Amino acid sequence: MGVYLRSALFVVAMMSLAACGTSPGCRAVTGGAIGAAGGAALGAIGGNPALGAAAGGLAGAATGAFTSPNQVSAGPSPICQ
Image (cartoon, rainbow, N blue to C red; front, top):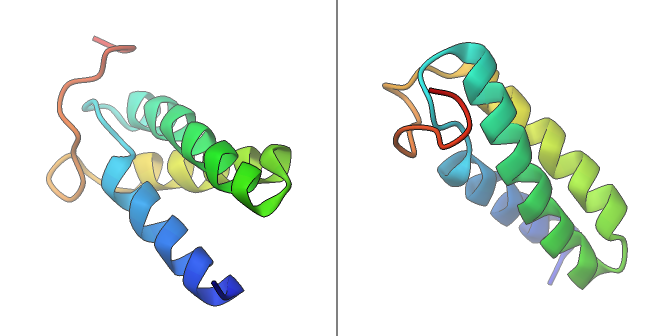
């Protein structure tokens, strides 16, 4: 699988999983946690789980912080109430 296809799949997966909660801070925290987990899994497939976790965490946190609950929502946050 090419690097570009993997990157595109990664972005789509993180956008669909990130950002539950209602406040931007809470959405950034949960998005970062979910993104880091997904990134570590994909990074392990590619041979570098730490880099994958870092990239996934950054992408998930940014997605959570810069989108509204109306755009991307995975439901109420288990972390922030």
